[in-house]
Image (tube, rainbow, N blue to C red; front, side, top):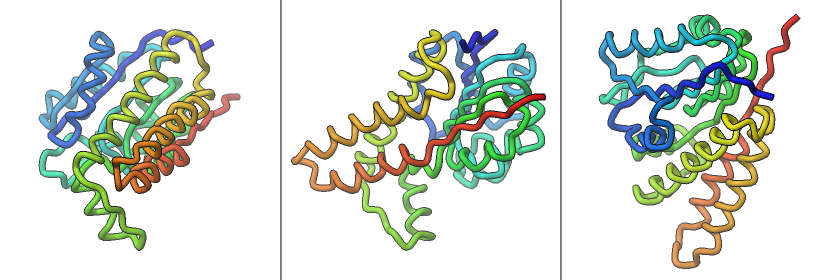
Length: 221
C-alpha cells in the first residue's frame, strides 16, 4: 500500500512549538528536531535529501502559504526552511504531511511530491490568537489552557494517524477521513463538558481545523 522506504519526522523546534515534542516520545527513532543555527538547519535538509523514494516526511512547526519556516524564538518567522522551489526539490517522489499553518495552500505549489497533506490556520499560541484577532472580523476568545487543549487534540490525532500510515493500516488519501472521525469525537467530548463555559468557542476551533485539512495527489506521466 504505502511501502515507505523510510519515515522522517522533522521538528522545527523553538519555544512556541515545544508541545510538539510529543512526537519524539512516540517516534524517537524517526524524529529529528533542529534549531535556528545553520549547522542544525543543514543537518535537517541533509536528512531529507538522503531519503530514498518513496519515503514519508512529516514536518512540524510554523508555515505559511509560501513555505515552511525555520525555528524562531522571536516569533517573527521571516526565514523559510523550504520555500516552494526547494520544497519541490527535497520532496520529490515522497509523501509529505505538513503540520504547519497554511500548509493546505502551500501544497498547491508542490508538484513533485506523490501525496501531500496540509492544514489551514492553526492557532497554537497566544501570539497567534492575537494575530488572528488583529486581522479578522470574527474574534476568538480563548485562554492559554484552551489553546493547550486544542494543541493536544490535533497532536494526538496526528500521532494516531501517522502510526496507522506507517503500519500500512490506511492509505495516505484516507487521512482526512480519519481526522474527521477522531476530531468529531473530540468536538462531541468538548460540547458535553458543561463545566467549560467556553466550550462552543473551543469546539469551533477544532471544527475549523477539521474542515481545512486538504490532501493533494500529483499524477506522474
